Length: 106
Image (cartoon, rainbow, N blue to C red; front, top):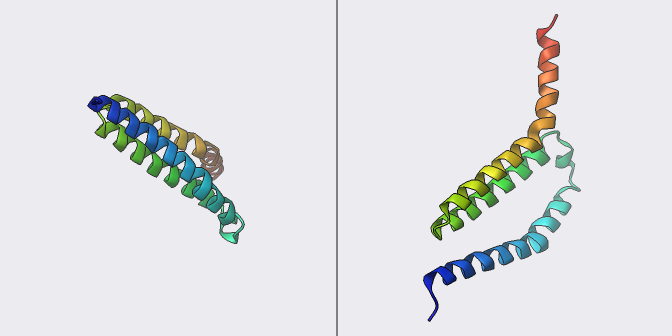
């Protein structure tokens, strides 16, 4: 008979194997196909879609970890994804601040 902690570990391992397989076989080909459409020429659409996908994955992973009594790891992983999303937007935020500076300074 195995311990419940071992079942939790197997659950997490199989979840990450399944999610990486789905990411490689479904999400990345869909993303590459989506990039061929004209909608990706819009300035913020790739960042919005990428940020929302990362945030959704972060919520799923943190919920799974928290259900299996790994709350601190769930918090750290969710915080890391939030920081990553912010760093993705830093270039656009810098451009926006430069435009605001041009508008405010006479």
